[in-house]
Length: 291
Image 1: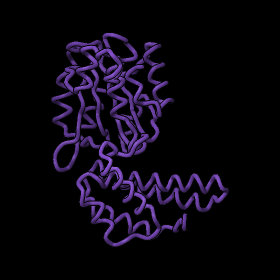
Image 2: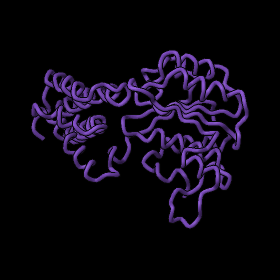
Image 3: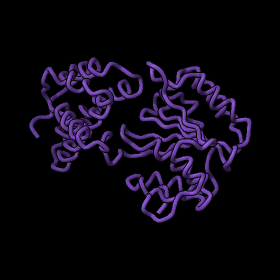
Image 4: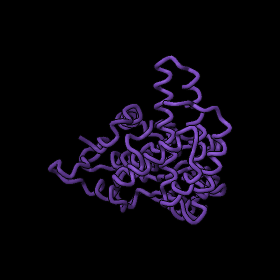
C-alpha cells in the first residue's frame, strides 16, 4: 500500500499523477478541480508525500497505522502539517480569502531559495478562487517564471472562476466526488446533514428549513452537497428508466443547489440568507415530482 490508498475512488486522477512521477514529467503547477466534496487538498498532500518520501519515492509511506511500519520523517511531517517545504495557503479572516500578504510572505519570499529538507518545495492553495485579485496576480507572476524544484497545486471546485492566464499555466487534473459526505467522522452530524440534504432536495420546502440548516455552524455547505447528490441519484435513476424529462429537471435543480456552494463554502455568505435565496430560486424551476 502507499499514500494513494485513501484515494481509491479517484483512480483516473491518481493514475495521471503517478504516471507523471514515474516518467519524471511533473509540471511546475497543477490545477486540481472537482465537485464539492472531492478530496482535492488530500490529493495535493498525497502528491507532496509521494514526491518527498525518503523510503519509497513516488509512492509515499503507508498511512495505515496498523501496517507495522512507521512513516519516514518526510511523510510524517507532511501528514502532521509541519514539513518546512510543504506550504498550504488557507483562507483567512471574515471574508475567507487568501490575501496578498499570504502570497508575499509564504510564496514569493521563499521561491528564490532551495527547499530546506526535500527535493521539491510544494505550495498548496486550498481554494484557488478564494485568492483576492492582488494575490492571484502576484501568484501569476511566479507561475509565469516558475523556479526550479518548486511545485504549485491549486485546488478549486470552481475552475472557471480563476484567471484564464492562471489556468493556462497549470496542468489540469479532474477529480470526482468524494466517497463520503463532509462530517462523516461524526455519525450524528453526518445523519443530520444527510436528512437536511434530502429535505432540501424535495420540490416543496418547510419555511423553517433555512434556519435549521444554518443553526449548526459549518453545516450549510455539506447540506448543499448532500442535496445535490440526492438529486443526482434521482436524475441517474430517471435516465436509466428512460424518463429524460425527469432526469433533466433533477439535474437542473442539483446544478442550482451547487451554484450556491461556492458562496457559502468559499465566500462566507450568510448561510441562512443563502439557503433562503436558493429556495426562492428553486421555486422558479420545474418540480421533479414524487420519487
